[in-house]
Image (cartoon, rainbow, N blue to C red; front, side):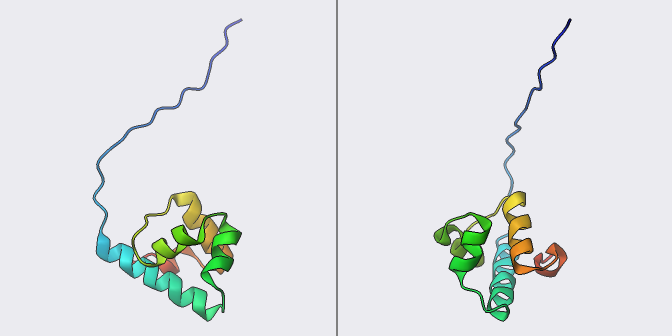
Length: 86
C-alpha cells in the first residue's frame, strides 16, 4: 500500500501594489460601512481581525487577503464588485 501525502508549495513573488487602487478600495469600504451605520470595531470583530488592521485597510495602508476580503464583503452585505476599483 502506498500513501501519498499532500504537499503544499509556496511561491513568493514580488508584487507591486497599486496604491491608488488600495486608497479607493478603502474609501469605498468606509462609505459602505458608514451607510450601514457600523463602526470599524463592529466590522473587525465580525471578520475576526483587529480594529487596527481593519482601520489600516480603510486607510489604504493594509492589503487584505482574499479570505479577509470575502469576510468583509459578507459582513457589509456587499458584492466584491461593488468595492473593488478594478
